[in-house]
Image 1 (cartoon, one colour):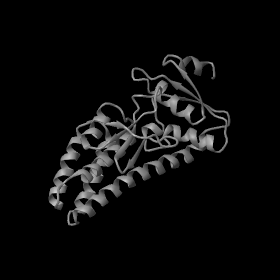
Image 2: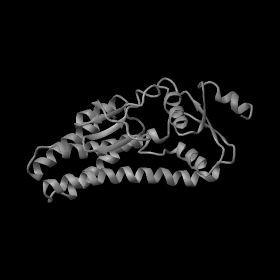
Image 3: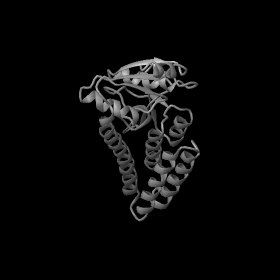
Length: 235
């Protein structure tokens, strides 16, 4: 994996002509480093090493990993291409045995592969890439919908406690729990977040705090032992 040029703003993952570009979450918050995965093995290692984490983000990454396998395959016939894709799918499935979104995304890519087995190799490659983009687009749309629905639960000047990271970093973009916070900020509500540090990997201190601060949303990091005291005080 090698650093890719930093795009304006930031994104969890994106497809480029060079391959799959991932924001390396291991480097945060000290550095905003992007990795370009040009081979399936690099995608698998990114998942295994927690360069990418969060169930929806892992699912989207795996889907693009399957598409990448098709793009990189040298097979000249559809059956050979399908074999290469199936081997890549097996490798990606072994990265995180407990990740539900991973297997959901891989199953969806398998179904698209099965539906296109009569297609020419280039058409199959295009179909798999299209499916990966669809998974990414649908994830962002679902997060935004969740944010809109959750908005009714967030009053003006709400102080919201979070644990771990359920933001844009954990998804294809926008976030689940933090999607609700973002939706409130977008309509002008003054909200703030108290982020547990979340030991031992510090997803709260390193990731939640980074993305909220990066996007201009007020955030305070607290130790994992502090929330009970804060709630007792009505804070």
